[in-house]
Length: 375
Ligand code: NAD
Ligand code: TYD
Image (cartoon, rainbow, N blue to C red; front, side, top):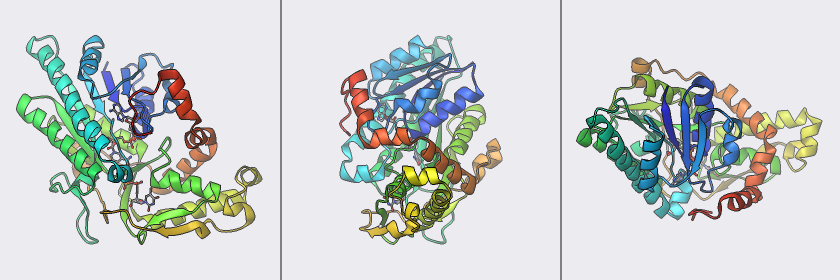
């Protein structure tokens, strides 16, 4: 039985991981540590809150004493580290919080793990710990149209403050393995999509804007390429790394689905147009969506000023993870996107409460303001 600490487990990927893990490993004990910034949402964990062995702690990964206490009291043997500031646009407007959480916060977790776990190891009380660090393909920089996809050996060349802060955290994780012998693994993955994604990222933002009949802001010429990975395939990849990954190693996780932003937006428009045209209830619920009055959602596409330093292309080569661990993405983009679209249609209350601020009000009533400076 594992005793796992999941940082950032109330965010998009962390919450999906918690659902995945409790489904596949119901016997394990799982503690989520999350400071509930604007991106953290307890509603994301509603389905697991009564799961035996699950508990939630609101706290900051920068609080080393708190993390040490959790590791000791709960005899944690595995940390899966998702907590981060994750949105590139926010990092351009305000990098400080990215440096604090992504670099100092990761370092604080590493210090706590070193303190508690290496002490347990040297006193012979316990062995077999694992610190898994979740990172991004953005650390490798931007690819030209004909460049080969990123491998684990691609030199780091981060371009945004977000990517630079993640790169720094990756280096710290590596250094704690080489210097102190901490048992670590790192995964670098491509753009995730799926349920519970905060509506500031491309896919949920476009989906919700189509439903509301609002403009779809396409940065630059819309021809930037991302390599899309369904969040469930990502979780499966992390599970394989935890089970079979070699300490000190880095594994790339990708979905083998390179698409331009404008392609994604056009696919979303067409999927939603067909769905709304064939469903009277949806036409009533979303009267401002172009499809409700027989128009195409592509009429909402609006080219806007490009993101500064916008990376042109990301592509992940997951062949090491496939060969060594048997990883294989299972969810096709077509199915994954349809399911995601259905999830947002069926969970309107979830995204409405984020957009109209009622969710933040509820969190403040439950917990006070905390130290969330990102609101
Ligand atoms: P997210 O922004 O949805 O969630 C981040 C979570 O971390 C939130 O619940 C937030 O409350 C929590 N958090 C932030 N600062 C904290 C702190 N100081 N202490 C404790 N908790 C804190 O992010 P996500 O999209 O789920 O990404 C998770 C991880 O995956 C990140 O490390 C990110 O860099 C990485 N990643 C994401 C993507 C993607 O497409 N979303 C792709 C590659 C890698
Ligand atoms: P995003 O979801 O922010 O992820 P990342 O920057 O980590 O790849 O953006 C995905 C792509 O979509 C990226 O090329 C920027 C672009 N984009 C837009 O064109 N318009 C938007 O409103 C957003 C949020 C993103």
